[in-house]
Image (cartoon, rainbow, N blue to C red; front, side):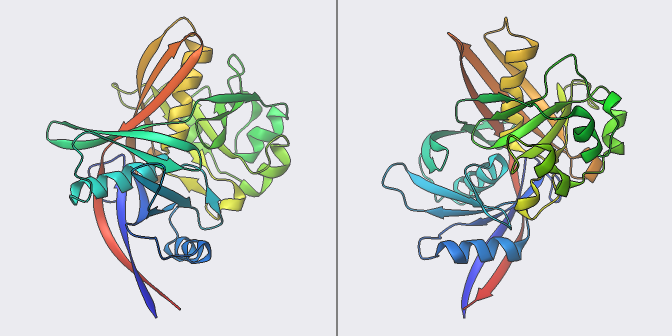
Length: 296
């Protein structure tokens, strides 16, 4: 029997059992794709992350939901790099590069009020129009069509992983949301495997700028992500593209997870030059638990 240690880190929070849990396997060089998938399924978190050697960057990171491998995961990256840095496995003082299926990305480390933060670059943002039914979409997340803010666009967006960005008029609507994930593939005809990310420009906390929830693709094997890094990053790109197109730089704090009692915050950093938009996110993490997986 092989035994694999999976460390649980909760990203975008400094208190255990808040933020977004990720499984972290620090040395996965000898694991096959099938074994990584099995471990992710048995751990059961939205993502489990595997660190392997890279000949293109300082290290390679692979991300698995319980159902399949994905290109990039923000909270998984923050959790993994926080673990590697806090354990002293990464000795470089400020920045490294990571190889992902979304490309080679830069990761920086910094401390604020003695707390270690991980700042990760994301892939260049891409948007595609949603041409489906707003009525069907609203019902798929348990709302009415009037709850969706049509003054700004509902669009597919990606900074490494695709999600459908859905503007919502009121904070109150978020507590009424009941996702019917199995309806997503027929509702999201252009991208049937996409997740759904409702957001609002009204917030619970005074110092934050956007509020959100994140409902998983039914193919991922999960229902909801408590605090999402890549989706928060693409919301920053959305903000500077559709809400404040005249700005060349902005920093936002996205709050998420309140409705599932796992609240956390993602800092989003956006710059625009000659219509090229660059996005990075930052956050901290906290060690919570250790899981041992046995398999043949």
